[in-house]
Length: 311
View (cartoon, rainbow, N blue to C red):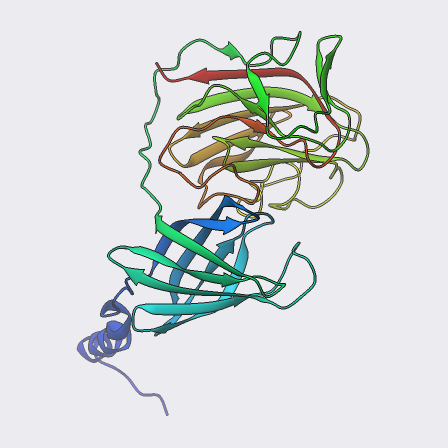
């Protein structure tokens, strides 16, 4: 036997069914947070996202000082206090990491229990909203690499493996990261690079968001492979050439939105980068930042590094 519902009955049913969703209140902790952690005797950047799942469960993502964004299965709350557990990724062997925090006057703070049991203090502020400007008035390109030496760049450690030979900027093996003296807000970047078989590097936009460079030819696209925003944005296809061949990125970064053209194909189009990636210089997302070339992983070469800023 079929039961027929009048339009009014059906409308009331749908209203009652969706009412809990419409009436759902946002928890004050929900949102994205830029964290600073006192790790290894220095201030290290970190990031946290908290969002609703279902009726009352809070879930999220967490970025530590290194590694990719990690999912949080559940964030438990006790009034203004909260806690969650994160399995280790690239950390030393030991226990899972446990983060305890409290929301006070619009900021969060607390401690993180590291894999070795040490207790690390941290603080966090809401991620600022970055303005997006359509069709900005671009200036003239600036060559960040002059083809002669490291003028305009500095190193983040004494382990320098960078040199310039025959107009090519070369990182021969794992060592220091290379950071531009200039800082940028909105910009376009064109770079040409190559790497040997099995190598891994990256370019950090504003020193905070890594565009992955790695020998991933022939693999399925992934946010941790060639052309991805590490741990966050996956390219729509993997266009990596074989190791040893010159490759090209054309990157446009405005506000928090990025477009990446790799080897002539747009692989990420106008997508929002949710937060900083592991290995970032800092978590001050509202400020201009430099370009950083990852040198602490594998060998890589560059023959072009050109930036265009907004007038």
